[in-house]
Image (tube, helix red, strand yellow):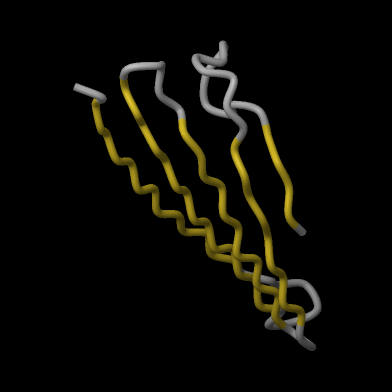
Length: 83
């Protein structure tokens, strides 16, 4: 899945730029993996703030009634000015 999104981490959009993202899923007999990505420019006109967010979710069906899962994420943010 891929997509284009409005600003996601604030109540108001500072620059009206779009974010881009995607998700890849892998399903096996007892295991499911989801890798998600979201990135884009979040800065105002004079401040270039780029953010990239990666998220991995995994589950494993051990028994009929027990399925543990794990979720981890990593965010990279860079700041640049026009001056």
